[in-house]
Length: 322
Ligand code: SF4
Ligand code: SF4
Ligand code: SF4
Image (cartoon, rainbow, N blue to C red; front, side, top):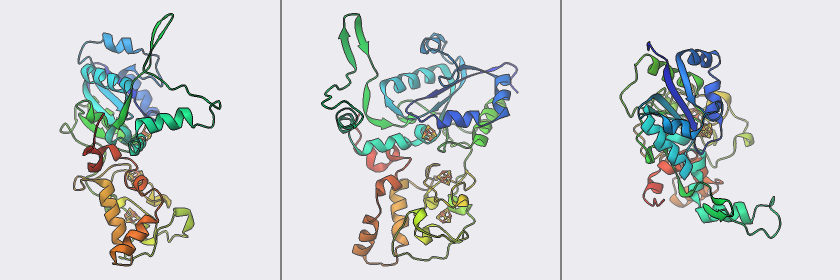
């Protein structure tokens, strides 16, 4: 146990707030954390300012938990700042780990996003032509807003990350495990994925696989499912074979397919490509055109394949430009 209080920062980049809520979901443990640690910066809960962090000496923080992806220059600035100030930098949750749901924006371009949000959005006044600019001169001086990057990045694309805690959001028990490991100085080797297994989710799922083939795929609500049998073999796309175990099989145990939020296990290089291959392998027909036809019927197959990790995909990384 540390003989002084740990110094901690928690930050959200391009995030939904769910990871911050997961920290609060550790229930009374969060109070124990308050006993063990000074939370020096946590925008969602503590009124710290960026300048407070800038004034810290390098390495003054023991731990920075960064959730959310890196979408703009502000996210990047704080990621770099916290990296300098913290001895241990943790990517918390799917967005920081792999790009997450915000990473799906990389299917399109910055210009298309701005066009849709500022020119075609039905909640805007008709005829609006105002678009945001990073810098504007006004009578009082220069107004600045963060620069919107061309693409969403993972935290590890902009700074060195010591540990990754997967999940959307991570289970509170995982967050607790990371905090306790820091308190007890029992962290694993840098670069590790913490609080998850190296096995695939299918290895822990109790649903039975019978090598059944399917004619087509449906949404979960379109199928009266057998609760004991594999969802994929019932025509419901489940990413269990290409996803790291560790969540306790949360979704399949509740009748919902795994969407892959823990990211790929170590033996899977590209989670989306592998999922498409797994889905294709359960199609009844072995005719390539028929397999293509069945796969093409799936609405938004990219959204299924890369729900949490488009910025981490091989496809994406071969055409990166920020
Ligand atoms: S990982 Fe999930 S819960 Fe966490 S910020 Fe991203 S979208 Fe929200
Ligand atoms: S594909 Fe899904 S439902 Fe089937 S065994 Fe794997 S995790 Fe379970
Ligand atoms: S079952 Fe899959 S999508 Fe659901 S929490 Fe676990 S890893 Fe995430």
